[in-house]
Length: 107
Image (cartoon, rainbow, N blue to C red; front, side):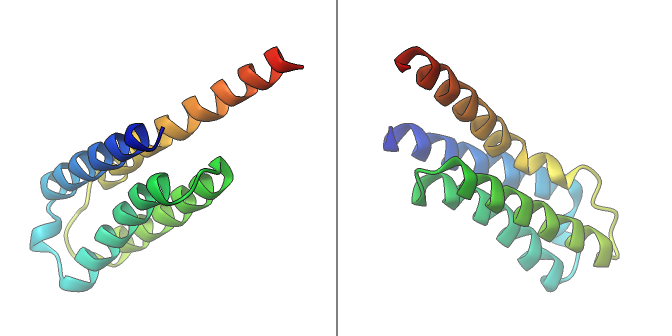
């Protein structure tokens, strides 16, 4: 299961990095780049570092807040930079759904 989460974390960072590049983060200031990187990295690393979906959800929310803050203070329009959190969000939703199905079958 760890290899599966590692794949999703790497995929999350690749998609998030491409989305940040496409949104124009490289032309923004360094503080905006740090906030975007931290938001994307937090969500991706939480998939590998924890086995609990509630920790993943908290990290996704914090990542979204960091990305919203970066978008708010950026002089450059960071359109759709939040799409970088799409991959870990989908993973968390699928894991939550499958855990409920497995628990229902076992009871």
